[in-house]
Length: 451
Ligand code: IFM
Image 1: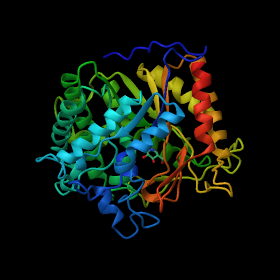
Image 2: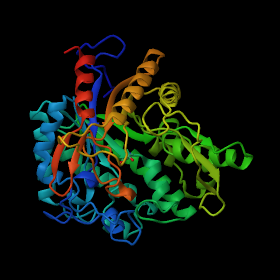
Image 3: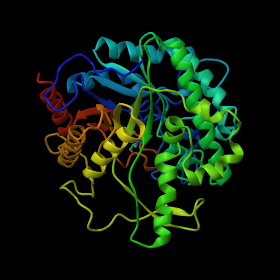
Image 4: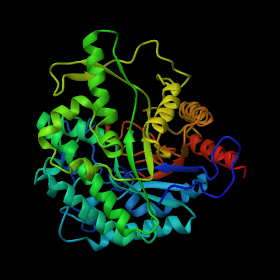
């Protein structure tokens, strides 16, 4: 289905039917990790490895969304969002990744989807947000070429079960983050650091994406399919030639290793050369399948430097000390966001949904009156919102915006140290407190809709 503008009319400046949402992911909020037949994922394994997660925490309970989903839908309704982007937990549906299905897991997403629809909130489902079933990692995970077929079978299950009610699907979330951090830099599960493994993972995930698109297209009537990419400008630390070369290679890995083959049919030049041994005849056509929208996750630019000790010879550089702060307390670059939106429209020609943008940090806490006043997050969102409007005014085809995230949650390698939520979660009691930013976002949505 071609992505069409929705039919309501909004304030001048935004396209009609502009969509406002919030995003989360399964492992980061659901908890109930060993409940009702869910199998382990590679993140359950990593959380149990020494040093796997900075604060030694796990997603075992997290926000307990598995049990509190109805309350969380109520929070979204109170904010007034149009759509909720969540991910399905593959190991909750297929505990070992393939083979027997878990009926209780299927039922959970029925309840969630029905609850959203009853609340007037559109469900946007992502098939994969990093929680590969451990049973599949035991078979090589994404380094195994069969992984594309495993993913396609999982997509069939999802499409048949939920495709009557869910019409917006994304295949993967942030392809390059989980492959680069998981197979080249040991910052994410499964914690491999090997060039060949990384190249195979890139190619097989691309094949899985293509296979998933075909499944969704053939089984879900009126489906709208996207893929969600992290894209951030990569700048060299300082001006040394080796840092410029590092930035160019990181740019290929971070920004182009997935959207270019999926949407233009080719790998960027340095990766193309390295990955050639793993590309079989016909693969590029399997990867480059028509989709309906580009999902952009964007937070800010990244800085690269040469580091010969690392798998690809690049490492993360320092942000310049004089980088603009905009009153948020850490450097932000909204003009980079504006330019990225324009570049996406030009390069790939697809409608863009901003599927993640938001502000983390470790300073949110209830005040003496029990309120969480997160002025820094409001400032960040205001500035990025204006940058999005500037991009749209200059011709970027942006159709919607999702804040990351609804809830404070398990922030991967940082554990619970980084809070990104519009809603504060007191993890020991599971009490939810909408932060000042939740009120701000609701007001913005109403103002933009003119309601
Ligand atoms: O929490 C993550 C999310 O899972 C993927 N995008 C970035 C977020 C903040 O780091």
